[in-house]
Length: 311
Image (cartoon, one colour):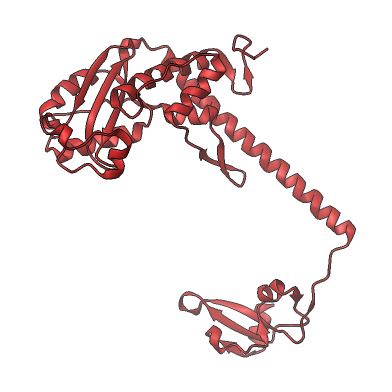
């Protein structure tokens, strides 16, 4: 229709402010409950370099949109329900696939000897700052590293409100450049399980760089596993975009521990949250519970009978 209109040499406008008030696009008419009553009477180009021509119709010739009959409404409703059911099934399949992959990863980790992995946690100057407290706990429960660190940049107030560590408390503490050999010894040859692995790993790399320590001198382990992602995939709420799974709503360390402990019928002891050692110890406990859950679960929708409440 647009090509035919152009061939008839209809009036053509290049800016909205040139268009007479009586003319409107089909979309504009639709918003007013109208539809074109005849052929287009003009065209207009808009967008980058005027490359998107649209048809313009006369408002005075426009007619009210025809209301669909009850039969048509029923057809539309049924089609919408079928589409919703299909999208819901697609989303459900994606959630189950994601959860199955998480279970397989946890089942593989559960086979590793506890001496081969550690949990790690950091407290920082801010969200994209340096580490001011680092703790490493082995899978057996031994504290391998626990150190306050004097940073090269100030601690932001928002960070202080979370962990309560001030610059004054760190005045006599060593810098990262002074303690990294001991930290590397604690991490050497180990896989790292962290609650927010990307955050802790990037924090260590940033701290290393700001303290002038080369990557040749301080090398992080290659194997990192994020228990926040694992917990959220198994116990968090899916966050879809239409019928496509984007991610899961991230659970906190506290809520992750509560979720898996509830399934395993475990009682949890309080721990000093937002201290690197307290969180590293709590992350180890979470890891062990997730391992047990993974060992005793066929799938998120079909748990084995030895899980409490499975029968």
